[in-house]
Amino acid sequence: MSNYTQIFKGTAFSSKSSSEVQILKDYLFFINAEGMIEKTVAPDHVDYQNLLTTYQGKENFHSLGEGEYFLPGFVDLHVHAPQWAQAGTALDIPLYDWLNTYTFPIESKFSDLAFAQEVYEDLVSTLLANGTTTSLYFATVHKEASLLLAKICAEKGQRGLVGKVVMDDPEQNPDYYRDLDTQTALKDTEEFILAVKDLAKTTKQGVYPVVTPRFIPSCTDDALKGLGELAAKYDTHIQSHCSESDWEHSYVKERFKKNDAFALHDFGLLGDKSVMAHCNFLSNDDAQLFAETGTAIGHCPISNAYFANSVIPIARFHSMGVDIGLGSDLSGGYSPSLFDNARQAVMSSRMLEDGVDTSLPTEKRGVSNSRITINEAFYLATAGGGESLSLPIGRLQENYTWDVQIIDTKVSSAKLPIFRNNEDLQDIFQKIMYLVRPENIREVWVQGNKVHTRA
Ligand code: GUN
Ligand code: FE
Image 1 (tube, rainbow, N blue to C red):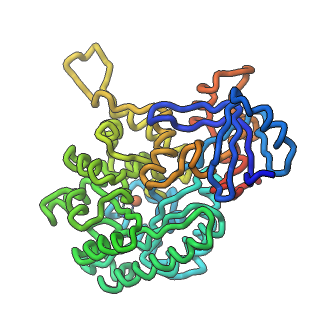
Image 2 (tube, rainbow, N blue to C red):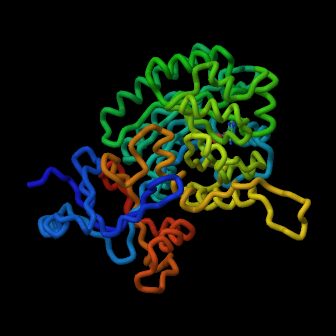
Image 3 (cartoon, protein in one colour):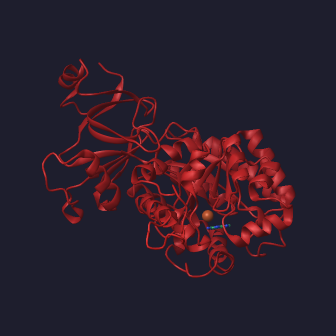
């Protein structure tokens, strides 16, 4: 009778713009065989009652219970998958020391596929349980283990965009953890791209290969150039770190006499499918270049507090037309939850905002118009991430994927403080954004498939 594989009824929240959240109260969502939202029907539509009568009670009709809501699945624009094994540790030391004493040693262990499998399976399941339906991953320099991560995403139903990391400069990287040489780095990357493109054909949600120079300091000029060419040849996504810390930013300036943004651009590494993590120290010219090329920022607010001692002026870059989404930066950021990162994005932006202490009229602190709202943080975690990746994800509207988290505000172990009948839905939305824990996430769906059920 119908060509809809699933039909859902319930109240949903979805970004209308970067500052406005649309409340879709008691909507019907019709999902087609490709896992796309084919149509949405509001209760005041003339067909609503008829459709309800037709489908209610059928096996593929899912109606939310009381106190349950749909949110779009989250899009995490920056995850170091191997670093899940050290999440929460060693955040008190500077980036350079952290990389050399903690991170490179643990990443080097991913030559062991059994270890990689254990960590990656746990990570992908954890991210799904936290509502993250799409992740942009850095794996390690190892081609096989990176491919294993893509396979685990494919099997578990997550939309994984995965990069084999390139670190080819023998002067800058430890001998125990780097590409053998530039040629091998490029050959491995090309083979990895082809293997992931093949794997993608077996999935509904898609998995994607990503060209991934770790950051400028770890790569030779030849590698950066070759990677730009591979990205163009295979039309892949690109990711790296850009203007993250004072140390890294100064290193690039010394080497190229320009900022990261222009250096990356020279190598063909900026564009519509490029996502650059952090970007704390972009100049206005750098941000303008991002806007012109369609390059997006992966904003990692928890990590930035530790490694950059910095708050990126998100509001300003957004107003300049730069695409921005949210990233956990596991394990530079300790939390696998984009709820936690959305909360930190708001708090950090408030710390950048100018002061209002009128008893000190001559002492200006902070920067006007820096703050962002929880609506904007939600946008970064959903629609902003989708726009950054140029994929139809992150919104609950027609022609977008059915990637959702079903939020249960009444679960006894993590009940949200909702006491009044008919509480304003905008208030409930805010409570969800600030208070939800993984226990509140009852189910997660990606591209029309259920990929997580709360234990
Ligand atoms: N810059 C280069 N590598 C890394 C990394 O693993 N984490 C962070 N935060 N910055 C980096
Ligand atoms: Fe990072």
